[in-house]
Image (tube, rainbow, N blue to C red; front, side):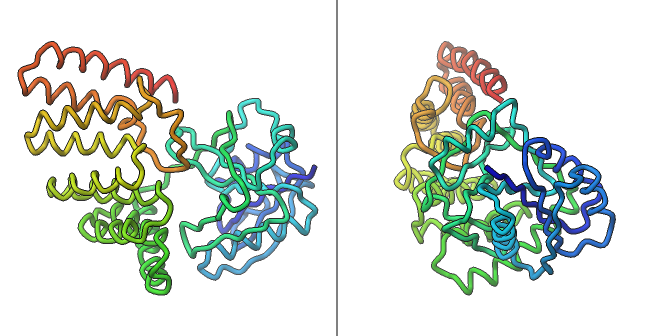
Length: 349
């Protein structure tokens, strides 16, 4: 077996060393794709990877998918059976897992790895040669379901935090790119979702709702459609448009009834509307598919989640709604469960 890690890099001299250091001991080649390096990034990379370092130039063309496809092709040319995608601001923690043994046993074409907070996963290991390709100028996607996929247990990754200024610039660039892309591909729900994400993260909540709604209307895969409704409801709650937020939660549950966060948010919205009995019903429903005393482990989900809403969030709604209803014993019990659920989430990482 030959494992090649692929890293897209521009001027990353201050961060590339730790990225490569997190994988260099167990991969065969560290492939760095030079998208326009003009600092000491390659020298720093060679200091960590030594003879394992291979560099391939790829002039940046404002197309992340094209760059990632180039990296996979280059890894294939280097004789890899598996490619590991690792950006310069990411670090992989295998936590003692025998990666080679896991890859030997794998029957899938793609293995996901969860972030350290376990709130989302990324495509990380790719069987080569790939039968699928990346698509998208930003927030690029890979149709892993077509080649078989699962999340690799025990392995996590972390990402460096960007400065607020850097994040603002990134969101603005993404909005420009995705606004063009959604005009060119109006029937693809994914890009409407990520256009909404960029706008939401810039505080453009009203505009983001329109993008999330469009994603949900196009009815891609059920989890994405439901999560677009969740994000739209979040934005509407920020705008204090609570009736509309409640409607989005209800619609989201028709797309995927196992998304506990939608029921939690519906409960929160009802509390804001002073419909305390309804808030209690929604919160109780949220506990059914949550992680604390619920069956969340049996609900297949790929990438979208809000951990507090899956653990202690429903009990937070319950304690305040029951208190306002005058149900002191129920409010106290919900308070106790809120603390237990929060502690359980923190223990679970």
